[in-house]
Amino acid sequence: MLEKSLGSNADSLAYDLEDSVAYAQKPRARSQVAAFLNGDRVAKGERAVRINAVGTGFEQDDLEAVTKNLKLACRHISAIMLPKTESADHVDWVVSMIKKHAEPHRQKGADPMRIVALIENSTAMMNLKEIAQSGKGHLDALVFAAEDYCADLGITRSTSRRELLYPRSAILTTARAFGLQALDLVCVNYKEPVVLREECHDGHTLGYDGKQAIHPSQVDIIQRAFSPSEKAVHRAARVIYAYSISEKEGKGAFALDGAMIDAPVLKQAERVIAKARAGGLMIPDVSDTI
Image (cartoon, rainbow, N blue to C red; front, side):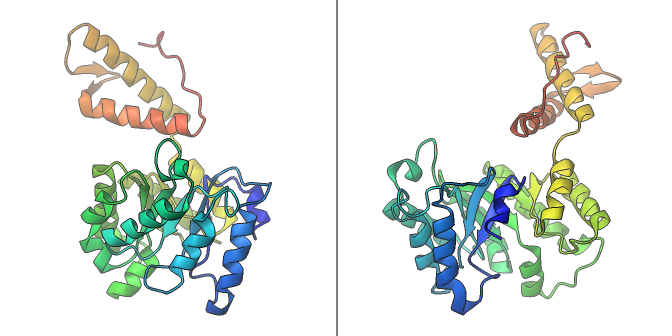
């Protein structure tokens, strides 16, 4: 599986030391992942390591293996995924380990070690604001771990996902408020692309930045769903250009293609263009279309 990751087109790859690894195999898995991420070959996407949760007794060895003296241990790691994040203390502990073991340029500045917090239970939901405010300079994203959340609350999953609207909305809103990315739940039906497309559309509509995948076959569908379409990019570029003209003319809200354009619409357009640029999409010249 480690070798297969080298050919993945995923934007971010998570090398798991937690749920997918049996207790007896954790030391071996830890050594293998650390060695792999210190090798000469590297996957093109972001490379994250999902450590074991705080309190399991494995978390310190995991973090030391992937952060201690990065020149020798794990030089290609981009982020730490922190499962079962329940409080700001959990995030701050990871930051303290980064500051203790990682090289100076990974502790702060332009290339800090990022932290991705997984929200998996009711305690985490009650502490969302405090979690999102922690880990300054390191905390990068909140991820909704729906299966664990449902198990914790006794929720029965349905195809409508109506029972998950509150936690998904709360996580997204909190992430936005504190400048973090928000990643939506896993689609466990990895052999059913229709279900995955429905979930992707749902998450994209809610405002999520992306979605977790558990199988390589899901990656392309997810990327297509969360990348702005050519039509959306063209529309956003026209809104931004037209707004700049309107400002120069001292106007406020104005009409474009029969729709009112004001500051909130501009903000949405700017978000679309930012996503397009991040995905390497071409931004059209629309100066002759207004």
